[in-house]
Image (cartoon, rainbow, N blue to C red):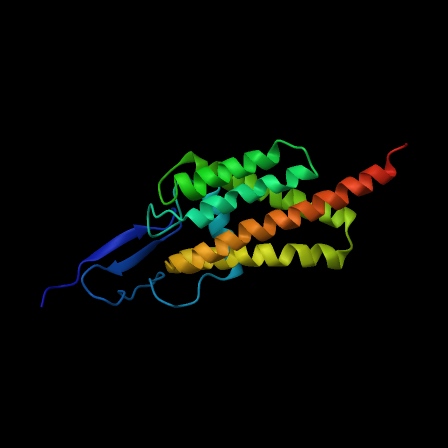
Length: 196
């Protein structure tokens, strides 16, 4: 038969993935392959995220494949504005939509902007949660969205579009709901401390 031809796919500057374009099964290599193997460890995911902060590349292996569900879920980041009238919420929704829907799978500065803004938002919300909620409540609000984000990142590293889509939508939904709760608690704490 014909020899297998390998195609190299970029993973956002972090590594490469070998995929056989003629054989139905992935080509074994020392890097990840498109199969059902587990995604990256938490450490690997954090390293990949840190490296992606300086990159305009997409980390999605399937290229420009849009999901309306992901695009619509980006708008959830406007929800916290009901308790925190800050420009950061519509700005987060905008960068998320531009990165995750409009420019999904394509090189774009929107990916860099979204990664930086989302990272800053996560740390700010964790700090506010630690300041105004019990440790247990803060952990219960933080674990579900961060788990969804990790599972979505793992799915993207495996090339599993369906799992990525599900977990990325959950990341947007659960994270924005958690932000509403944190911002509400934060505003109530500050209102109680303010002189009448």
